[in-house]
Image (tube, rainbow, N blue to C red; front, top):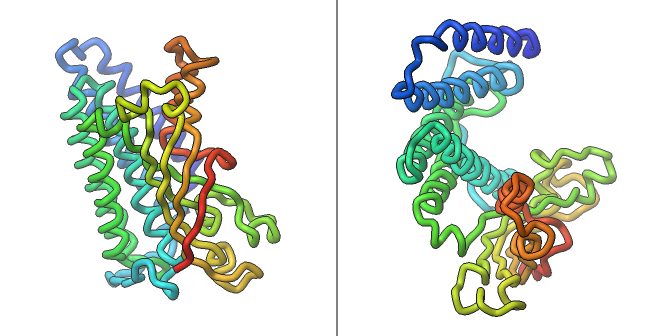
Length: 288
């Protein structure tokens, strides 16, 4: 088992040495490929280090494919984990795109590089999962990963649609998580709700209205009673489609206390683009 703290220190020290040694020979024209390579190699190294210490401890010499199903009642987590996969790689693609823009690429090229990097990473992780006894290679996970990546590239490449749509996750600890005092927003699928949000502020006619511009229309999916007890807890299993309205908190803050284009505003807008704050949406459910 690798000591992740020592491993991280070695990586950091090696990086500092490398940067110092090459600082004098890096010319302005070399910045873009240098930063691009740094992003890709850093992400691959970090993912590998985390995977070795957290996911791939029970490795096997035999490659195994595991079909988990999709959104059926008897599938793991009712399909919420599949949306979790899609959202995770959607988020990584969006953030990586910003990283490649920092490296010097234009927005469209940055989105393409982010998509390719995320796709390679997702397939690599699943292949490694295939050599473990616990997970196995999941074609469903790969499909949802690529779907999330595609959504990320699409919205990064179409700013007008990005102003109209958000893909968010809302988390509130599930009944069983609170009962067991097991608070894990990543693994507590029964506390997650995934939403496709249409923002009135992205529609010119509605954006002109000083009240309607803060309105959002939500459509989503979530399960209850699956994790962290895998259906054996007090909460019955549910698979729900959600629909309703919410308040555009980001727009509201921009028009009031965050009027100036500060770092705080940028960070707040970025977080609220992917996170639905509990209590800001009126959602109705239709159980499947």
